[in-house]
Image (tube, rainbow, N blue to C red; front, side, top):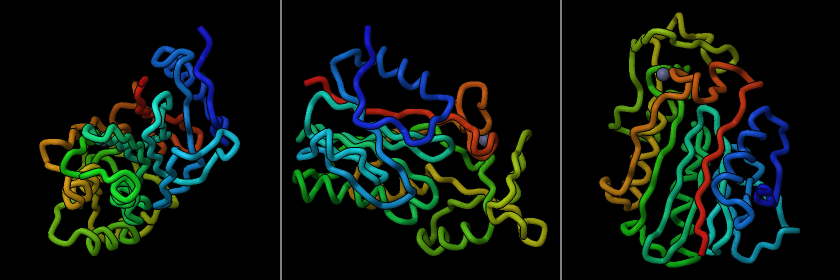
Length: 241
Ligand SMILES: [Zn+2]
């Protein structure tokens, strides 16, 4: 069976592409078109209805569509993949959200785009937050912790002095001041859940008990743990008809 065609191959020839293509082949065969974006840690939302194949690849970190036959995909390695469906209006979305994207508001921007373009009601949407680096491993410096404290007042997103076995430190990520400040880790998934609930999704419609990508490197890729050579996992959502 031939693989699903693709509007765009990732600009980065990462080692995971063969596995991604095999996944798509097994999932969709020839029947669906895989859509990947040029992700840039932004709040950019691309609506595929009205797009022609020649218009892509597009730059952004969320993609929405009502059309059937498309597999909307985001690539992640520690960042959050978030898949959203409006069951009533049959609108789909795939979102890539790391700490930059969460602060930029890519999740609420996606729901706003679904509302303005299709009349989606967030109260009728379901969301799945996939595997990402967890608060067990995602140590952050003040440059990341402070804006999260400001953006999510009163929320317990930052964990202090949590030191699980295998905790991974990274260089060049604002951690140089770690020895002078309390060690803190960030719960990206909880921040995303907070944004989804604030946007109107019922808590019972958000599914988010993802394992930590850094703790489970036997099955996941982790940018923090493996560096720039880490592969990328594909999270995709689509409807056949
Ligand atoms: Zn972990």
